[in-house]
Length: 360
Image (cartoon, rainbow, N blue to C red; front, side, top):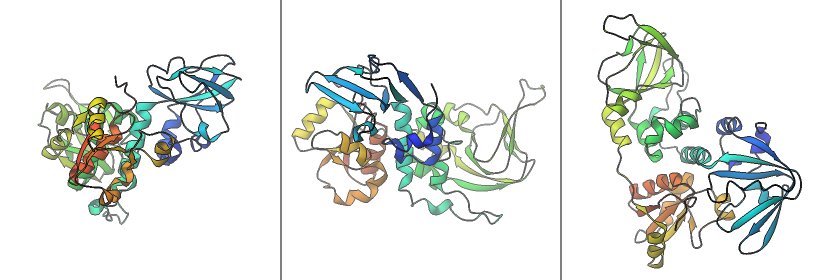
């Protein structure tokens, strides 16, 4: 199996809409799989829809409980979207030798969420002014799309996996920029956690001593685009290392109070599919928070499309007397969208688990 080329990722939806950095990151995290004629390539994906599967070469027959059979060819518009793998799909059969691209749904949804949320952001300009060296500082959008600071691995299991995505703009609004000099100690091992940091310019050294009288040992070097300081804030423990400026530089920092507040922001109301359908029968409205290309290909009957990256501009068209039930495939984008709706005074809830979850 080989990693797909960026040219391939630019032809399939919704991946084609990802930022260049995310597509480059994704190209290293997914692979093209060759499947022989007569084999069912979706045999592991029908009951547990954990992967988005794309047909990129050959012909595939899909067999459904209802509606019989469907022939899928790699060069048709339908092949630009992931293959439907739901309860109605009985099996699939490769009619020729085929090639498929498998992508973890959770990984893809994290990327889509961050890209969509940052795409429409022009309200975070308080940090966007020239630095002391005359060069423009990064905008919040540039920070969010930095795959070094916000790699998908960190977004899946790091500190940012614990932060509601919609709170990121608040994080950047509250951050303070500080100038630093070589030799300056930013974090002292054993001290209480006070700030979380992003490195805008400069290099820092991380050292740790294993005992009170033990010598400090250099354990890491941090550079522009890096982040540090979250462990003590998340765990509420003391600092486990000392961080010192190796060069002059600039840092962005977020105080502990704001960091904890953003981590522990109020939970959104979650609704089951059964409860959501009952509310819709009483006048609530389904909202699909995904991209138009995803919505047009497949959506819940009666749903309106309010893409996460456009939702702020679309709220003026909504009826404030209505309840909006927001969904996406996993619940991540819909949570961010519902959070924005609630912030703007709307009554909104999130479909628990998203449409990728089996709702019995």
